[in-house]
Length: 491
Image (cartoon, rainbow, N blue to C red):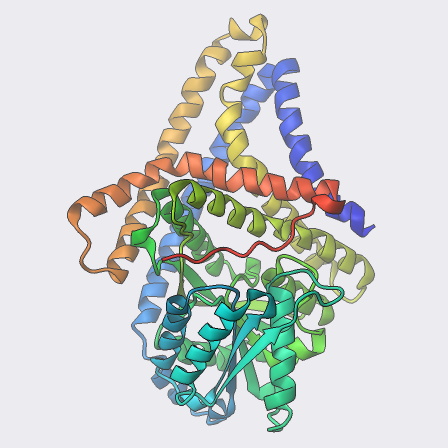
């Protein structure tokens, strides 16, 4: 059963694409009407998402001006001072400068640093260079935090794949044994933040986190999701890398404004007690960041949610020494994210076994998962090709109709209107860039704005195609499945 569910995303994607070609040949008139309706639907959806993005963007900027430590103190609860923050940063071969920037941002937090238990989770397979980096970090930062621990995940352990999940699980078990249990720290008094090693936090992040932890509906049954902004190095990457990074950031902003659809992604925080009870991160999957949400959702019979912090963290955009390598890296990173479609099989199989989750929640999340991954792999391709496909292969009987003449014109007009959403997003990206770098030259602002003209290319090349490949590999199975690909960090 699980194998059939695993094949579902790829099967649906290829069925859609094949039918698009076949029906454009056999039933071009019906496809033409479908195209007009489909493009109109996406136009209204684009307007809707643009409004949500603006709302989320404004809320994020407002939240960044709040002194969250003062807001927490106003709650008149002293129990927050008892909460310890376990912060795990998995590392492979990232340069010392990048790792140091992340630790320096933690050192500058407006919070009691003695409540921080930091773990730099290295990989044994990374060799001596990683050991040297870890030792330098420990020597420089040990005195600032409550605890700073270095772990080394052994290579080639059974029932594991190379990836973050296996490293994180090894690290958290080490710190549990060596620090948490020895100091008898209550599990419910620990919040775990799992950050990519290039993650830089803002001074108020942990104050904002603890405020949301104290005020959410069920703090021990919640993940806490910040907005990842891939901007640490945005002025030093290619236009395609910058554009794809901002598109990812803005999508996460949109999701934060729709918390009922939000799951954990990349760097996030969650209760330590829940991690222990679900058995930590799975060690044999690629998408451990989103999978941990579903592990908790199934374990607690649907009583789990992601709380949007609407507060940012900063990470690296994809970078490489050459333009070609950068393009390859962007594609591979998006393909790895697209491999999150493996969660469809995990969730559907879990829903079949778990009789305690309400059918309403099951139907809702099945639709959200399947439709989300299906749209990711097909929508931009369909929009880009169907407008001209019936006129190309629909035959002479169709090409002499008025509909054949009007179809490209109608779809073009709809897409032209939709570009206003792209313009709005481009303006938001400029505002965001000016926040990070106040001294941006006027000519660079113009360049950054014009880069958004590349949006149709990036949506297909770095959106649909890597997602479609990931789902196809899941469809075929066996040796064709993806392993974990570590995104190289480059300055």
